[in-house]
Length: 350
Ligand code: AMP
Ligand code: TRP
Image (tube, rainbow, N blue to C red; front, top):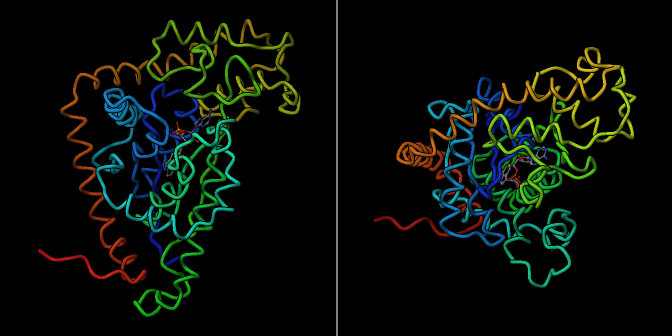
């Protein structure tokens, strides 16, 4: 039995164009975990500014992610919905982790290589240490479980490495301060990467991840798309010319078909096997309209609710403010413990 109480943390960056991959790979999982765990769901604005963000657009995007959380079914009374920069512990712990993580570890991060591209000299230093901030997000609450899409796996391994190294480096001090020496100060957090849509692919290219930054809007279904747009994008999705197979083995080497079947399965809350039971032998001319109907039925109500919340900034800001207070109340004692372990002097009083 772990000494750490089960707690879920996850985050989404407010960088615009929330899409079906974010929804199926992350947000639906967030909703599901609320029934079994205390959960914190963060809008990670400090991560967003590792690449340039227009300030006025950033504010709108922060509120948009918060409204997507609520519209998708995260209950702000139950779960904590908040904005990263409003809880100062994230930045404080990230600094300490900048001093725990090693250059060699960060040099291996594939997301940095992708995002920095060819011009690495011009990438912000924040982009390089981004995974340390992510570890701080999680460990500031000693979260035990983190639901994410497949692309975050490497970052979560790094989070465990940081927790482990902190626990080892400061083992004597952790015991002296009265913490369980076996467990250490931080848990080794488990990634939750589950379901049929942990990696939703572009609708235009089945080997490329669906992404906020793809220049083609036809490549993704945005959470704010209306019913007609969703149907049009599915109709235009790239496919091959064959009928659907009746077994999942038949989806190998058919990335576009596999993607659409995975999307159908996730939206219907079925397995891909069940989907192929129903649609094996069907042409895309039959499958695509069925998928479009399902996608519209599931996504259009979320888009409607997001549009309604867009005009209610006072409500969103109140949810984020109350969430930040609740998050801060959990973070403060954890951060005080870190400062004591590290050997900093106690926080000034008065
Ligand atoms: P981001 O938009 O990068 O902040 O991602 C927010 C969450 O959505 C993370 O848990 C990602 O792993 C997940 N995610 C992003 N793109 C996809 C995708 N194409 N398929 C599945 N999950 C995704
Ligand atoms: N890096 C994640 C992404 O791009 C977002 C994120 C930041 C996150 N901090 C987190 C996800 C903590 C899970 C836990 O998708």
